[in-house]
Length: 152
Image (cartoon, rainbow, N blue to C red; front, side, top):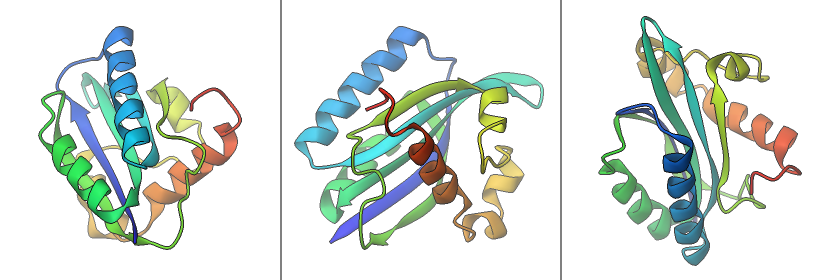
C-alpha cells in the first residue's frame, strides 16, 4: 500500500547553501534506495519579526518505508516545531519523477506561487487548514509547474 506524509517545520537556524545541498544529497540517496518520491521546499524570510527558515516536505511510497523515514525525520536536529498535515494511505503517487524534488526559495517567491498559504503558526495549526488539503494542492501545483526543471 502507498502512503503519504506532508509536514512543515521550522529550521533551528538559517541554512547555508552547502548545508541544504548536503541535506538534499542525503535525502535523494535514501529515497532512491527506499522507493520514496516527493519534494522538499526550504522557505526563508521574515515571519512576523524573525528571519527564519521553514521546511515543507511531502514523502510518498510504500507505507512502512514512509513511516520509518518519517520517524527518522522527526528526530532530525536541523528542525523543530513539526506540524503534520497529511499522514495517510494514497492510491497513487503524485510526485512520480522526483526522488526528492528540492527548491530553496525566499518568502516573497513562495507568496507568488499559485496556491500558496500563510505559514503562521495559528493558521497552520487550525483544524480548517489541516482538513482542507491545501498543502497537498499547493505542492502538486508546484510540482506541475516545475517537474520538467532540474529539481529532481
